[in-house]
Length: 368
Image (cartoon, rainbow, N blue to C red):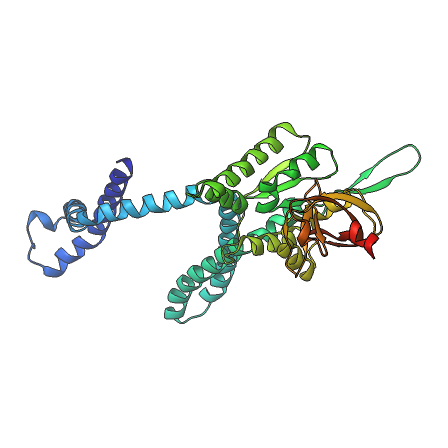
């Protein structure tokens, strides 16, 4: 309501100003007031001011609501925009306008009136727009230079001075948050430095938590609970990255781009994201690799007691599992499904997707 009154007041002032400046000349041009009370210049200006204000207000009365709605839309957009977007967009506009000012100063020296009047307006609008676009679209690189760049600090001691490099920022992806083991790893202080949660990862978690599918909803809520635990209860610095890469649709691609921009490390348990990071020379920490590294070592030739659960992919194969979930493929184990048998380890295959053990029944070994 206040904004509407301000717009109306502006229209009245603009109309009064226009009437004050031009209506006396119009009256004089028509020359039908010669010798009348309107012939006095003071009276003519006063009449022009009043008529100009009334006429412009009446002519643009229907535009007031559109103007107010337009300003309200701009206000809502600016309020919702991240602070970094507003800051760097504004800085870009300021730089563009400064360049336009110096350019227009040189143009004013040109004697051609059309160029000196039209070109400055065009250049001001164009350079202001270009400055905003550059500042807005390159905000992440600028933010990196100011906040998340690689830091170095010097530490003094009695014996010598040492240069200490801060640990790289660890960027969590959606899968590793839902997995939950990252919280336990942080609690043991094995993960150094700042843990960064991108805003687009939070949005994906919220979308999963709001899913109509019960399993997805539970996974999303578990991920949000893990983040709350990490932020409130664990001895780790958790920060939220509010930037986004609007030109990129996939969350995994945004993670890789963010890691490149801030020189960070992606933390994941997604096998495919792990391969993409390696291909694009982005450092990655895979939780599955860590889990495999701390599993009990199983070597070929050792004996285990397992329960064969189901068929394998190949003919006559059976599948069993260790307590930690490691799959054991039992050759010639199809006949032992549902039974607990002793097996002899033949080989171990370890990848980022997990560890797989190949074995054969010990009874078969004795028979041979």
